[in-house]
Amino acid sequence: MRTIIQGGTIVGAGDTVAADVLVEDEKIAAIGKLSGRRRLDDKVIDARGLLVMPGGIDPHTHLDMPFGGTRSTDDFFTGHKAAAFGGTTTHIDFAIQRKGESLIDGIRTWKAKAEGKAVIDYSFHISVADPTDETIAEIPRLNREGVSSIKVFLAYKNVFQMDDTTFLKILGVAGEVGILTLVHAENGDAVALISEKLLAEGKNDMKYHNVAHSAVIEAEAMSRAVDFVEITGSPLYIVHVASGQGLQAVRRGRLKGLPVMAETCSQYLTLTDKAIETGGFEGAKYICSPPPKTAWDQSIIHECLADGTIQTVATDHCPFWFDGTKKGRFAGKELGRSSWAKVPNGVPGIEDRFTVLWHVGVNSGLIGPERFVALASTNAAKIFGLYPRKGTISVGSDADIVLFDPNKKHKISAGTHHMNVDYNVYEGLEVKGWPVQVFVRGRLLVEDGEWLGEAGFGKFISRTEMGRVL
Image (cartoon, rainbow, N blue to C red):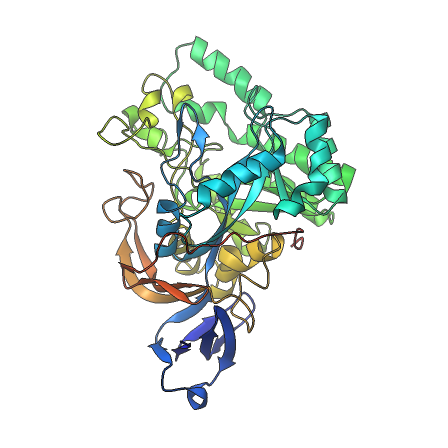
């Protein structure tokens, strides 16, 4: 059956136009005035008063991920279902190499996690945990597994952190073979040294996580990473940027013409360091690395959303139970009741990114609808080699479509969200603008709050080469 979305306003990353959309065989088959092309058996959707936008692409998630003595609570079904309710139709998750295993082993492990559960479409980055010469030699073969991006860490000393020599080697090799390097930029040596000092002084309250992961610690690593781009000439994508000072380094690099790009996350658009400083254990809900910084840092992030310094908005979705002691749950943030240093590190957000960005960005006048589409969908598609299959309402593209009501209000709450976690970092935030129908490859998954999807529908999207530097 064909579907015609009729009477809506199509918003893309470059233009806005009133037009109908014809969906056939999972693709967008035509755009324009389509009343004369209707067939008797066509399904017609009235989109008057709605915005027709490409489905959101979240380029940074962690589903079913082991971490800190437990694992993230959303798997590839619950996480995908929540994403769809929030207007996200594709995401890129982080597969992780384990010590002693190959990068290919890590990718195949994560493919198995998704098989039979996926609801929306997905792809993978691969994170390096064992940066040996053999690992580096594998990089040119990643595209055979459909992966064209690799993540390195300047943080997590004695776990993931690599030295500068290894970072330079990986960045250079990856650039030579068309693989995009992603970096978690915090100075792991500084974090470890300061953490040791704080804990020795008995400073275990949640607020000390902010001290150990300060803005300058993030900014130093970001600045160093930008300099390494100049040394190697290889493109670099800096993930989950929370530091205004760090964004100044990105600006510096981009003004010099260096191929460096920045991602921020939706939690940094609304939260500041005050959230983690909430009294008692409540602040553990907001512990992630890097943590939200000051109101000044947030103002620079907002500025960079508008001026192009930031290319994408992701979530770093990595949810843990706030109270994992309840029946049917496994360990969660309560593992860190004695100290901030033991709190599983991550926050939920895959369901709320699209609407929070619209609310903070468009409703405030900070950005326009077209820039919103770029940040929420199109830029990620272009950077990570998904475009034009994903990230655009164009003839021949996958029919990943969100019908968005810009006037519909919704109060975000753990009581109504679909993520498999017992709290929400945006609890009580009333947003204006909400997805009312969400399609993946032409299949309607969400309609007016009703779930119509099924496990196994989502597809792995192979990416054989990196996309563009934006």
